[in-house]
Structure formats: C-alpha cells, structure tokens
Image (cartoon, rainbow, N blue to C red; front, side):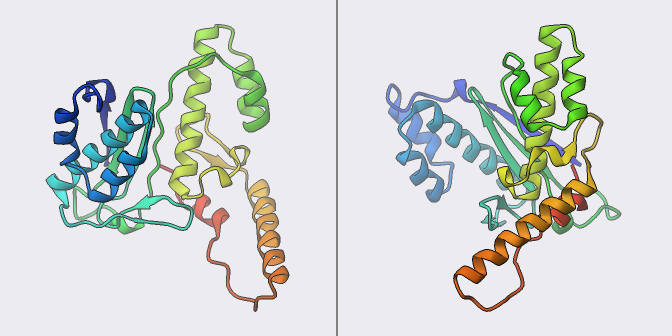
Length: 230
C-alpha cells in the first residue's frame, strides 16, 4: 500500500518574522537536515526542506523510529524499512511511503517508490516534443482545451519524474524511454537497450582513459527501470 502525505508550507512560520516558532519546528528534524536548512538562504526553499523533515519525523516516529536513511549512488535517499520518496513544489511538500500490511505482501526491501508534485503551468509544446515519446506528444497536441492540455501535460510530467526518482537515476534516465499515458509506465525495450549500451560504452571509455583495470560496473540503469514501476 502506498500512502502519500501532504504538507502546506504556507502553514509554517517565517524564520525571520517568527524565529521562536521556527526554531520550535526545527527541533523536530534531524541535526543533519537542520544544518542543511540553516545553509539555505531563500525562505521558500527553507520551508520546503523543513516541511520534508517534519513529514519524515511524523511518519518515522509513528512506525519505524530507528530506521536509517542512506543515499544511493545518484543521491536518492532510501530506507530499507520504509521505502519512500519526497517531492516539493512552491507551496507544498509530499512524502509517499510504502509499507507491508499483510503477511502476503512483498518484502519492503524489494520495493522502490517515486513521487512528484508540480504546479500546473501553460502547456509548452516544445518541451513535450523534445522530452516525451511521439505518442505522448501527439496525444497532448490533440487536446483542444488549453486548461485540459496543461493539466494532462502536468500529469505526464509528474509520472515521468516519479519513474526517474523511483529508479534512483533522476535526470540521467531519458524521459522518452517510457510511455506514461496509461496507468503504468511502459518501456520501449529497443530504446532502453540502445541507451544502456551507449551508457555502458561511456563508462568503459572513462575507465580506459583513467588506465584503470576492468571491473564490473556498479549501476545497471536499464534493468532497474524495467524491473518495476510504481
């Protein structure tokens, strides 16, 4: 089961206008996150980071207070006990988590999750043509109502961001490799294979330039993204 929690960052106190209230909220995040927040200058970004920390604190304290969060090679934060993902936009932060609720469900260690939240903006045809699949682009172009077109574009974009975050590869995973028009992301296996081979050659070339001994590559992005989509 996937649960998504939302926090309205407008509800958080301003760190400069209400410092006492702000510091009270800061007591509920880890010291590592608190230090990160203090380094951020922009108020909106401070609130987004604090909101993420507060959501993590609330969920972890209720279910797995001792669970540890680490980072994968591409920077994705992960937790074996509670698969999760965070996202934020201008005035909101979301936390999606997956937990077992019966003995028959898959072990959480085998689950990956990605989420995304965006504000709806005017549809940009050039962006869709450049980053989406041809089928997604043509579907968007066929929508006559501007508002519906903008909403559908945002839905496609958040789905694609969720897939990229789920794999842990982020923007390193090209959006045109998978189609998100349906309920699940569908990969184009030929494109995935070609992209993987290209990435593999890049890694091998880097190793040769550095005169390193041949060794097994740590990441296998194509197989990862084909394994499961949430």
